[in-house]
Image 1 (tube, rainbow, N blue to C red):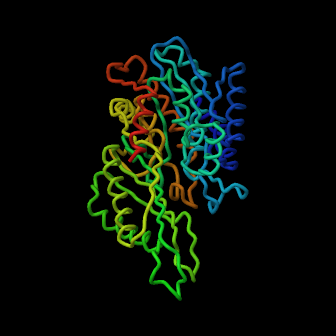
Image 2 (image 1 turned 120 degrees about the vertical axis):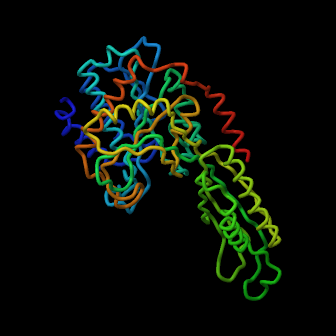
Image 3 (image 1 turned 60 degrees about the vertical axis):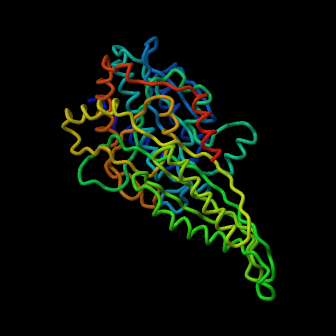
Amino acid sequence: MLFKEQFEEIQSIARTIFDNPELGYKEVKTRQTVVDFLNRIHPGIQLETFSTTGIKTSLGSGKKLRIAFIAELDAVYAPSHWRADQATGAAHNCGHYTQVAIALALYKYFYTTGAYQAWDYTLTFIFVPAEEYLDLAYRDELLRNKRISYYGGKPEAMKLGVFDDIDIGVCVHAMGGEFPVRTIETNCDLAGFLYKRYTFEGKATHAGFDPFSAKNAYSMSTLFNVALGLARQQMKDSEKVRMNPIVMESDMSTNVIPNRIKVGSDLRTLTVDYMKEAAVKMDDAAKGSALALQGTVSIETQMGYLPFVQDRYLSDFVIEAFHESDEIAAFRNETPISAAGDIGDLSYMIPCIQIGYSGFTGTIHGDDFKDIDPEFIYEVFPRFLAQVFERFNGRIDRSKLYRRSYEDYEKLILSIAQQ
């Protein structure tokens, strides 16, 4: 009943965050909204801060098992979105504002009822900045000033030890598009990605007087694009491979043959091993394109996020709760996609799940994205999640969990970035 009583309060918080979108590592107003709510609900609450705007707090202590509910604070850069911040271009068209509201709904419910006190695990709420991989110039500055070490908020938190005392990660995420009935989703694996930068260099000459002795860097990049298009035939469909080359920098003018073009592209795959294999193919395509037109190419590789393989053992608790619920009509399962998230990095260290939920219209990251079923998002779905957490109590088999260290993670990232 409490979820119904607190619905308007939680929806109001979601609206406040939606109307004040902020990019990663800049979520100052969003952070304050969360802190103000938690202090009002639980005076004297212990809050740990990290990574510029991150927040961590726990219900219960002294338990051997520790489960985290993770919400993401940041918005997307989408200046043409109908509710974008006109000064920064930030917009909440990925649904993170609803994650934060859902987390606060759960916190208030568990704290007010005291239900967590009977559990055999500690429940920790972690509000993480900078999930979206963007605003890279600003993050480059943070890196140079040693304020962060990673573009993504979860890898940064991992390095800082935020997840060292966590055994299981539970996330939720909006599902794009409209659904005819209220729907949840489990086991939606995500791709991981690399970011590649190819700098093609040739020789500039007058485009009218002497194009014959030139070496056209733009033509090399065009050939590279064609090569990638043809190479898709050699890429496995099962890996959900995606490449999106764009011209990042050039010195082009109409009367000079261009001698330098920088092309950037992500590379998405569902597995690390295939990411490495596909990266070699991309690099060969770039080298061959430069060689064919007597130019050169230099290659930079920047690691994005690891693929996310949802933990099927933990998902079974969600599926069980769905079958016992009479409030959610439909269920999707085993639907991998090429989108990525830094939950993939965290899932390398500890088992994680991410439960999808409907209630929106428009396209994720699109100009028309918004929620259209607030009752489901802020009342029904949090109530369902509470049932999932109840099912965790006393039933988690620790032998089915795993843990890798941050050092293990760092070694893997370095091995991929060398591709």
